[in-house]
Image 1: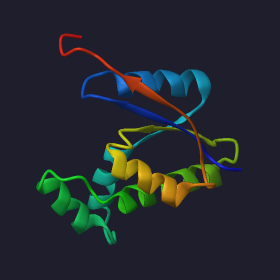
Image 2 (image 1 turned 180 degrees about the vertical axis):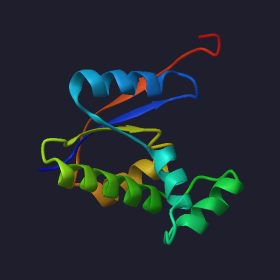
Image 3 (image 1 turned 90 degrees about the horizontal axis):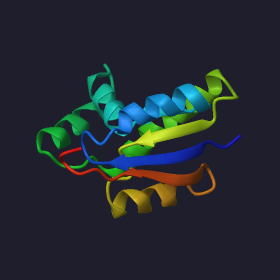
Length: 126
């Protein structure tokens, strides 16, 4: 079974994490944060990407799309291997730009179904 994906986007503090938690609870999705996966990978002993991720984050640059997609795909595969019924995913904080989206299409075309994008557009006051 292919993963079913919803991209969750919006600025810092817009409520992505809060709403993802509610969707997980009510609809049974699995929440994957691209940022959390990158931070966890850079700390993982023996990681093939750890040092590279660390350098990109220190420089304030976006990690290459191939690495982020690899981590997302691994997390989805591991989740579905543990429970074949868990094939719905909220991907928080990805794609961040057009390059990310094109990389996703190139790598994941036919391997995952993107249902829609949930975008939180909030004023700074909110």
